[in-house]
Length: 59
Image: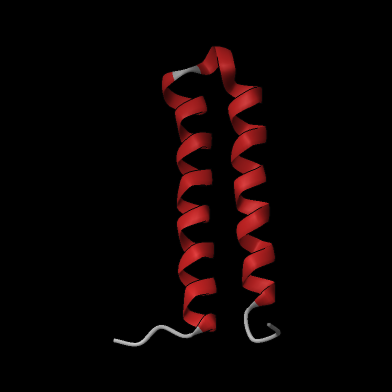
């Protein structure tokens, strides 16, 4: 299975989305006292994943 640049960007953006979603869900369900911090960190991960997805096909 050969991975080109587009598939690497796709996998990286998917993994970053999963990590960001996990951080947000941790803040909502397990650590509500750190909700704002975990949500901001999760949104940061999702934003970086979105940027990687936007780079797909352009690099």
